[in-house]
Length: 514
Image 1 (cartoon, rainbow, N blue to C red):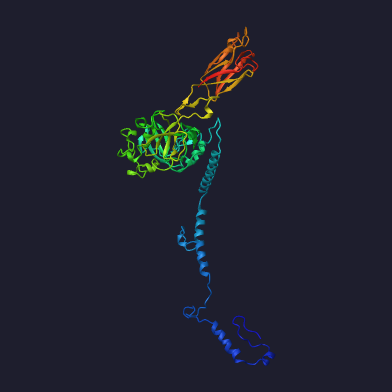
Image 2 (image 1 turned 90 degrees about the vertical axis):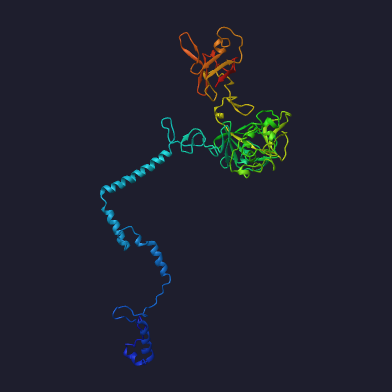
């Protein structure tokens, strides 16, 4: 026996033999079949041709709604199409294709030209960036922050004008003025400065306190807002050349790391009028709250008419600094070592602070104490002569007793002749004049090299050589100024300033003028 495929209705066997052996069963052959038909047949409205209410067969739609939502997201919203056709995607795509097909050849060529021009421009930019300068072609300028700089306005310059801190004075002028505070991120931290100059003694503190940027006598100074080390002696600071000034480089700029001046004179009286108009008074007093009403703790140490440099960087009166802001009355390092020696005792050095901004006293240079502090000044050096431009062996740049840069007008030195026709003596700069003499004048006669006047002294000026002229009129340079030095020569190994080392007049001495 078999049932129907779709509704599983009972079927009577078609075989007559089986029919004879099959009993008629009302429940199986009729009732169950009708029940199955009734459950699976839907009624249709004869007018609309649609299923009558309640005739729908429920369908499992689990996940179907989310799939539809995902599909709509991928396809986008048809009303948002920029095409005229918005009913379906096929129509929109066909509209776009029609417009593209309608473009003439000239328009297509224009698009091609634009694409090619953009590609060429990209190649040119890459080539320009990779250029290396040569004598014939300046090439792509590459600021390196050491020899070529870029100003904030985009101009290229050979001088670093990107000085840390504000460019505009808050108060005062370039003779004595205040720019405000400069963060250590723009200049240097206290710990890094100590490492740079080699100061390891004392205890580090306030490493990230900002710097106070001043103008003084036409120079730019950065003073530590608070002492950066304490329990340090004047002698220990001096041992790393940071009292009068140690030349250092920070961010491509040259500075002199030094102590502040407590008095205009050195040696000096410790207090009273001796400290009037000092660097300390000129810079530290006008930014202090006591400048507002003249309520100085030590009025005898303060000159009349101290200016008021109003600012709002402190916690004192009207936003001015007080002793606490600058660590001048209490706390470690409150007595800031300065440069000057006490006129009363050469073992003592002046310091400012300890009992307020107007205080001025002296302590033993070798003494260490928690009250003694290192409050450095970084003076921006203008016109500093780098080592590469100094002469040899002594150089053309040095510092005087006050740490100021001094240009020497000449250098001296010695060299040994090598007997060749000429020898180059390097100085590191091009001199304006050179004098050469042998180290001794042994006895001799006639035209021997030890007695000939051409061997005893030579002077060459820029563009004017010292020469030996023979009877034929030919000239043989014996001394000549060239770039970054001078050349010495000899004539037939008998005359001049480059005779063989075995010669009795070696070594030669020279004076080269800047």
